[in-house]
Length: 314
Image (tube, rainbow, N blue to C red; front, side, top):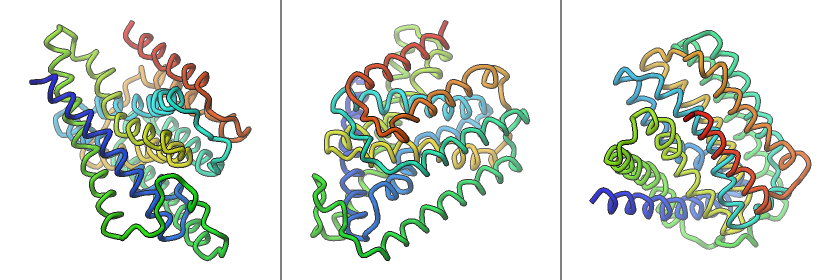
């Protein structure tokens, strides 16, 4: 039964990811804003829902280290695995994406997060700083969206595969709702049953936390990004990852810190936080030098993630 439920969770993830991409792209088409902006808000928040649920539960249950480890591990997985696997399936045309500013925001969020981590604990005061930074980023995204709507240029999404300028609002809302509800549901179903399978084979709880929890909560991003890659919508794929990483650092830990203090394990300061930052910097040539993320790069990203997992397990 656990194998069946794990498979069901995976199917729900894939279907929900497809629905969320359809809803986000067609929403941007109807209201006249770039798909990237929608990806940085609606899609990013929806795909970060599992991390938020786990972080709050972990703090309430007296395991705040799990909350921090999940966020840091998920951010590393988001870049190396969530972008690597789709690039293996279909080359991501990242050279066409206008993500310069949002990428800089992600790097600034990462540096801010690491700096605050050196205080030793994420409490409500630090949480306020993180949420304030998120508010500034969202305000800038809204300003850009309004400026785009005022622009009389032709909508660049009209020729995007899967975009339907005549799609009724009820279908758009339906796709978004299915995606936002299905993604955390599918992720939780898959993680819980995969954890049971792991214990059946004698894998320790530590190994489960370092691998299944971080990768499992990144599955919504992976499902959404894979479907975006198949639909040749690299802006949705890249925007989803950048937005999710910012939400993970600023919103999830920011909100969870109000539930209870989150101490920072010294090991995070020595290794994991710097790996997360290095993974973010790896995206530089694809954002600023307009490189496409080919299958070769997808393989390299995926291999780097495997090496990272092996390193933390040894």
